[in-house]
Length: 165
Image 1 (tube, rainbow, N blue to C red):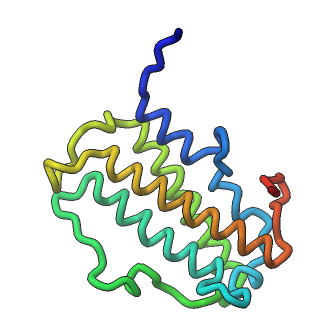
Image 2 (cartoon, one colour):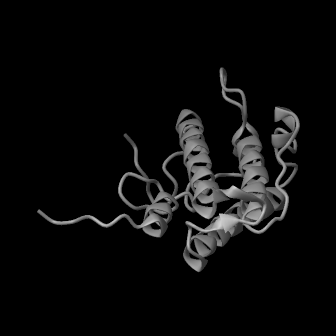
C-alpha cells in the first residue's frame, strides 16, 4: 500500500487548471463573441458578462485578503455584482476577459509563493489555504455556470475544446 502525502499547493493548483475533472477556467471564455456574453437565457438570472464581473470582484477581494491587515466583504449581496448586464463593445469585453485571466494567474502565483498553512495578517484564525480554497471553489462554481450558459446559447465548446457531457 502506498502512502499518499497531502499537498495543499498541488490540490489548489489542480482546482485552477485542467487537471482531472476540472475544466481550465483560463479557457472557458475563449471564442465567446462579446455580444453573446451579455445575453441572459430565459430562466437564467445573469448573463456571462455579469458573472465574470462578479467573479472578478470576489477574486480581487480574496487575493487582497492574503496580504491585507483588515478584511471586509460587501455589506449587501448586490455589491458583489458590479457592472452592467452586457458589454458596450468588444474592447470592454476583451478587457474584462484579460482581467479575469490575470487574476487566475495571480492566484496561481500566490498558491506557489508561500506556505498555504500560514495565517493571513488580518486574522490569526484564517490561513492562506482558507482564502485560496474559497477562491478556487468560487471560480469552479461560476465556471460551471458559464459553461452551462454557453451550452444553452450554442456557444460551447470553445475553439480549444472542452468537456461536452
